[in-house]
Image (cartoon, rainbow, N blue to C red):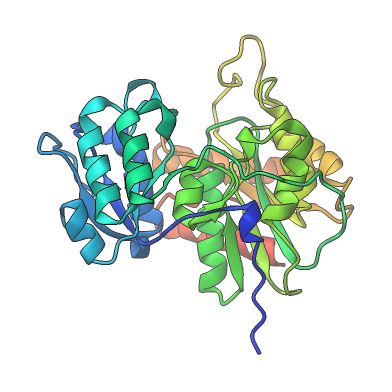
Length: 351
């Protein structure tokens, strides 16, 4: 008999899949990051794309109407683009209504709610379909209790925000599975939730319940099973340290991977706050994480070297290895040398 370990459905956003990716009327690829992220990291879930005639952006999927998307097997209609201010713009509404009428549920990471759009609200009432807001956490989350849970856990942490915690977690989860290790990617942000098909938007949870949400997200599992948990914020960020601490306590990680962008000197969105050194960032995360898992360890460092040449990336990664004594890798960068460094990081995580 196969035992499956699942988060209780009542306490977790659970998305209908597979997806039709809605590209709206966008003409700039940078506004379609969610659609491209889903296509890159969960291609098996993405069947078709839907768009208005004005759209010039494509993620390379067959373009279909909502009714054709439903007939092809799609069940979730993902708003894969962002408009100014994160609002659902009026010109999208007819196709969104068309999707509901075709039998699809809309999955949205926008700031608009269904109550803000009367035509959508009416269509939901008429069709019985849903508009699922992945920014809204589930109800009745518990307070964390710190109980030691079975299974193994890895959490990506960072020296700052927006430097690759999600991509690192996704890359590690994929590498673990490729090595034959039972692994789940546990999503804590809107795009990650759409990629995983489920999760909890940790940064929208009331502070008292953040650690409990993380415990709910990563429940008891088989002894050799790994949950790779997407990190949020940074302990050194004056705005977002609270969510990082709650996630660290509730995740109860056996392993952390420190994410960092070399040459970044200032904490994003702040005045006068500096990015910490790697040893300081690692030490603080281990000290705080040790509250709920005294055996926590840092397996290595993930660098975001997107703005560097291969030679520059190799130089800063080698310097960080000498400074910390840990493997340093860029999980996204291609090439044999960088692939080998990522293999060393994966091996260190699983050691």
